[in-house]
Length: 275
Image (tube, rainbow, N blue to C red; front, side, top):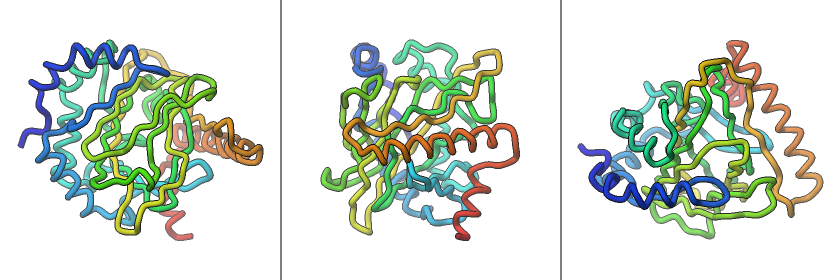
């Protein structure tokens, strides 16, 4: 089963390179019908067979986000693993490097913070920039995010659009619907503010599903830990600005614990599921 149409990716690469590198507020691109249709359909079908309330899923629940994530490859289905393997292959990494102009890219075998994500009604992810230094591999610097959406029949009134914000959170530059087989790739920096802060309002039978993969480069030296940095939107209340900032410091403390102690998302999720 073919996962990607490399001929098509190669044919559109010159225009995609220009789009990616010249996009505002930071380099990004949206590519529809990203996977071969059969692969996308099977990936979605398999996603539905691994319910996010299962014991293998991490529960990310705090003031700045409410979602579930599966990072364990051994708990994923065969199709999911094959898609991740292809998106981690030398051929695909070569295409990513040409697209972005970033050399020395590496996939993340740990899927740290990545993997399958599911957000049910009421879930959200506040605007933020991502952690730049790998939690467990201090030499690795994060370079690219790849987000593949798996939402058939998604309605815009359900919310869930990916928002891209300019430097300093002064303006919203883009709003991207999380449509089926739509891929968003962007350069991860201290200025790449993004998220979907409006709580999802989908029916009980639906959820916002995605596959998130992150790509790194080896800096050759240990990097300073830079955890996820959340910010409230300019028009939100003073109270929310304060609570977002407080939670940001808690996330920072947790990131340090993950790097320097045995604590990890799986352990914390087991505790929250018992509450």
